[in-house]
Length: 230
Image 1 (cartoon, rainbow, N blue to C red):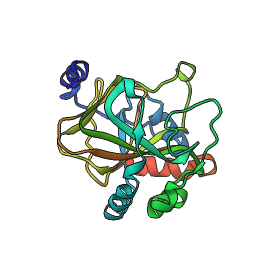
Image 2 (image 1 turned 135 degrees about the vertical axis):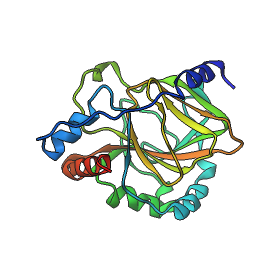
Image 3 (image 1 turned 90 degrees about the vertical axis):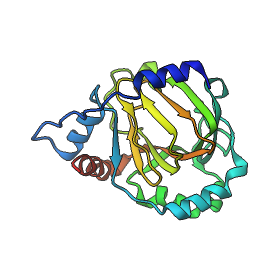
Image 4 (image 1 turned 90 degrees about the horizontal axis):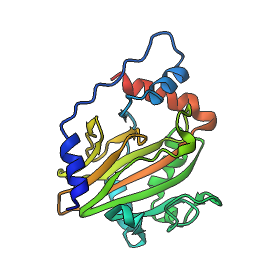
């Protein structure tokens, strides 16, 4: 196992996350914006279910389409796109043209969830993301220099756990381990340094959809605030 990842994991795994308290008197959208832009916001479990058994079956149907994702930043980190430039274009480029790929025909239930159930007008990438058995992702953050200090309600990655081995961990610096279980949905503040370490002999399969909420921003904000209140 990579020493940098092990050290990051051991340093941060026992941290305890205390969610910030949202001020009273804000509208739903303003409350969600306040929370998601707070420097001590780490994650929120979203109260939106999906059909785990069907998703596992459809995830299995795309298993031959994975390609290496940012290979210098991990081992066993692979991806394929349900929505993006193409199935194999898993990182952003200046000329991105986002569309549903042919994986949509292999994963119709998953596609319908992103199209209609999740409250987002459209998306950048929607990807299957694998961290292979005994794989890892090195510590990093996903905050471009031009977004530092930027007030953001949209563009958040939504992370759904389809296959989640018990001994695979997503850890955030200063905040600890995100409490993933199969069937759970999280919005994670990837502006913070984070890493993934899979100590198990099973692949971890998640989906990540980068949402552009548009005219569904109110619906998304309601989902965030109602989930946060539970």
